[in-house]
Length: 106
Image (cartoon, rainbow, N blue to C red; front, side, top):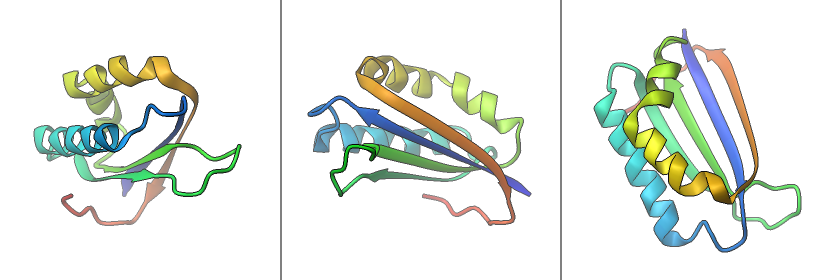
């Protein structure tokens, strides 16, 4: 079984521009390339419906197992994007669950 790791963040208005979205997509693709045995798939999605309770961005990852999570979290690419955008995070939620899904390379 693989570990599905979901993160949703609400960023301050105006922060998650098209350029920021592209940076997220490129960074998470680079993370997958750097940790191909651990990150089986990754997807970055932008919220398209404005409602007060909605988040701004969703990152969905399929990880090989629970041991892959700290490898990804401590990776310099993850640390760098976090350092850049975390000051603008108004709310964040993560969720991890076991899944039978097979990973696809992004």
